[in-house]
Image (cartoon, rainbow over all chains, first blue to last red; front, side, top):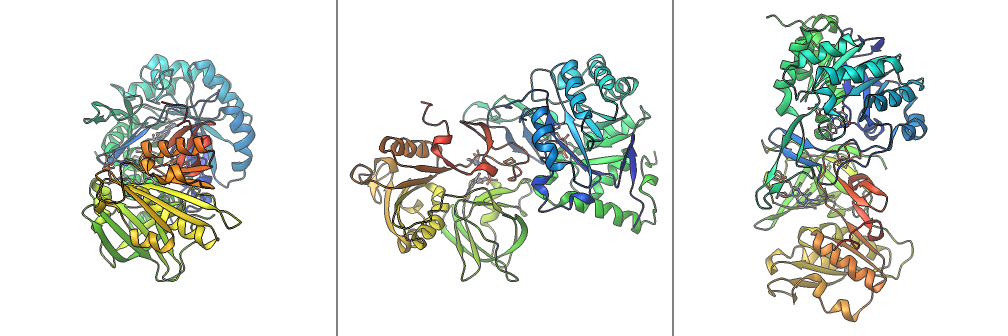
Length: 303
Length: 261
Ligand SMILES: Cc1cc2nc3c(=O)[nH]c(=O)nc-3n(C[C@H](O)[C@H](O)[C@H](O)COP(=O)(O)OP(=O)(O)OC[C@H]3O[C@@H](n4cnc5c(N)ncnc54)[C@H](O)[C@@H]3O)c2cc1C
Ligand SMILES: Cc1cc2nc3c(=O)[nH]c(=O)nc-3n(C[C@H](O)[C@H](O)[C@H](O)COP(=O)(O)O)c2cc1C
Ligand code: FES
């Protein structure tokens, strides 16, 4: 048993493995397969100030080594979350982090402030990178000024651990990471999905209802790893790495590239029990390699 | 109902025609979990390099005596074709049972019309059998393009009366299921349907016109199968709901099919 505990801002995780927003519901959906108290944390579905219906069906299409989705932040709004969902998840013995989205800096800040009032939510993950909504979402995450405007507004309204989730749909992700660090983010997580598309040649139309969608799954892992590595050299705050992690080996690659923790997304659809297996797999690898503390491999690439 | 992630063993594979196979799965170690008609399984596809996500497949039948779960697979793409290549003794990882099934009556006696098209006939076998057990009368109306595409007819006939339609007239009445003469001459206490959407919409219209309660089983594309990803939604009277969790079986009154053209 290696030492697995890591810190993200003021948040102490029992191990570096969390689940990614939008892929693990509110955790309860997976309780039949995963002992949730064995996870470092659960990042719940994107939450917005007001309810959103999301995009029309079809919202999903499988592609080589991955999938496209354009769910579009369907959720019942932050008040519903606070009143109806929070009571069901507040006693889970793991950190529950809320993924927050919005269409203006004020929306983000108001949503964050309402979540700040919930004792058992120690952190939020600010989604400035959703490629599937027109109003806001990724629009903020693709420029340093846009990212900074949201993070500044939220930082003023939210005193707990603030993780900012970055978009890979940019020219220099390191510049964006620096901008959000300067505005007081406690950590960054990356990557959100890559904007993609699929075509149905018989119908001569895009497959997805809004034409484009976000690509996730093993196909994106090399890009995600490269970005984590670049950001690790650009900022001092901790990095949460994700994008295509399917097993413990993938997770360890992200840790070595500079991530302090990781998130598992699309892999939960393939194996609902995978998150707990990744925890066990990291532990076993560390033991097999005589590494007593997971922190010793973080950013430990030789290059 | 607790969901399980279990490895089942292929007891037998029956090839029904060029593009359909029946997989009979079993668990040698323990009894299969309770499963209801209309529920489905998310099957992991192990031998297709291009298939990542699980594939949703309806519960075709549960043979309690032999401890078997039957899946009827239409080979339409790489995932289902890989399932079609399984042989006896192979292992299949299954996430089950998922979703909410068809309404099961608590009293006997009703006449139930079960209308299936193509591989959509799959869940009706188990549903019809359960209705029969409960003292109801299942009447099957099964449609396909041609005779060779009408599947499991013997199994259906063991449970109840079977009427068929084929588009080319090679068996039963010629045309679509909704053109079958029985619909004009008979009335039913309830209807259940599964198959291509245009067929289900036509059945729903018939049900509406005759004032018969009707349930339809939807096949929206799915990722998680657990209500976590919100990929599989159907636009209903309550807004977008997950077919995998709230369905796949819906009362047609919840769907917006009849308002659209
Ligand atoms: C609840 C549910 C129950 C189902 N039950 C059965 C069953 O009992 N037997 C069975 O054979 N199939 C069933 N299906 C459909 C089955 O899941 C799909 O055919 C399968 O996922 C296709 O995978 P593939 O890799 O072979 O094809 P892909 O390569 O993914 O697709 C091949 C072709 O099939 C079409 N297709 C794929 N998925 C769907 C879908 N969900 N609906 C309509 N068209 C689709 C694609 O557009 C494409 O043209 C069910 C689906 C759902 C949601
Ligand atoms: C169906 C689906 C829904 C998602 N919803 C959200 C969301 O609400 N908020 C968010 O920040 N990211 C969302 N994501 C992105 C994932 O959290 C993750 O960043 C991305 O999928 C890459 O990781 P992966 O390859 O491990 O899945 C979603 C991804 C998928 C596949
Ligand atoms: S398939 Fe994920 S919510 Fe239905």
